[in-house]
Amino acid sequence: MVKTVEEILEHADVFDQDQRENFVDALAAARKRCPVLHTEADGGYHLVTRYDDVRTVCEHPEIYSSQAPAIKGALPVRLLPLDADPPEHRRIRQLLNPYFSRSFLMRYEQDMRDVARAAIAKVIDSGEMEFVHDYAIPFSAGSLARIVLVTENQDLVDRGVTAVKRTAVESTPETFSAVAAIAMEAMAEVEAAPPGREDVLAAIVRAEIDGEPLSTEHRLGIITTLFLGGLDTTRGMLVNIARHIATDPAIEHRLRDTDWARGAMDEFLRFEPTVGFMARTVMQDTELNGVSMVPGDRVVVAFYSANRDEERFEHADQLDLDRVGNAHAAFGLGIHRCLGLNFARIQLSIAFEELLAATQNFRLTPGAPMPLQMGIPLNSPDLLHLQFDRR
Image 1 (cartoon, rainbow, N blue to C red):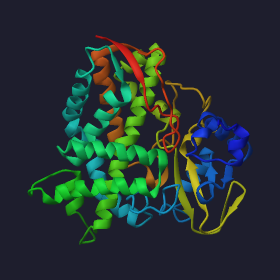
Image 2 (spheres, helix red, strand yellow; image 1 turned 90 degrees about the vertical axis):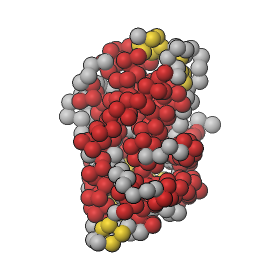
Image 3 (cartoon, rainbow, N blue to C red; image 1 turned 90 degrees about the horizontal axis):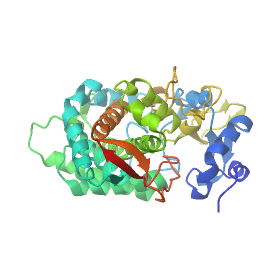
Image 4 (cartoon, helix red, strand yellow; image 1 turned 120 degrees about the vertical axis):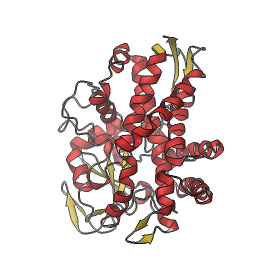
């Protein structure tokens, strides 16, 4: 049964499919009426909906700890560096940052183009595709497999895709355990490989912090996080952008401009971020927008809502590809700004450059279903049937 805005405001639950249809409207109402909204869902938490409040939470880890970033509470595996506070967070980011710089990742540009072209070749003659499974997943998973995992084990990657998708929608300890088990397999592959590998996973396996090797817990936590980030967030953005291309011919034309990634990409990210929510834990007595909190209280920052805040973005509910000064929260705010943001930007740029070099005139397949999902990615299509012409 579809929940109304008022029902959602009384019992908000970011994983309740019955709330999906009106959840964005409920977030808008909350920003005006109760910007730090309390709900009893998943043990109870404060849902933070305004941009400035989200930024306050993200910029003060001493008050709002990241130790338990999953909304549904304790997890069976760490999600490093997402669940680390200073100074641990800084040490892990210093280890990983060089491998996610734009200059390092661009070494693999041709690999990403090869993955894109292989996926396009499978559908180009048919004039139609189901974009999620025919392009978005093969491209994002293939890029991760070649650049981060450096594996030919397609079964491992396929199982990773399935497990990560369940985690994004359900976010239960069981789903995180499934991802961690697959990450453990990937780590074992690296440990068994001959010396000389120079890639992200190899660096993690042999890394040291303060002269000490990373523990198994730390290595597994980092690799699990790379699976979660690399197999779902970019997929979601690819699908969201493709839906706009198929429903507005002007957007396809805009993406044929090689400069689209300098501005328009950020507007897509602002308008429909694929990480909509993340949790924090209150560490000391505090107050946020008039709401008192005590140690142990749970806070969920709503990045999706922050990006629709009219006090921060003019005409926030409109997709404006000419928007300037777009300081969105799609990659997070504060010290936990997304490690993989360069990887995501490069993938989005290459994916559509290759797709639009081979195809044109995208449109939705008449009568085809386009189910949307509730959860960490909000309102991203599970299926997107498209028709196109060959160039």
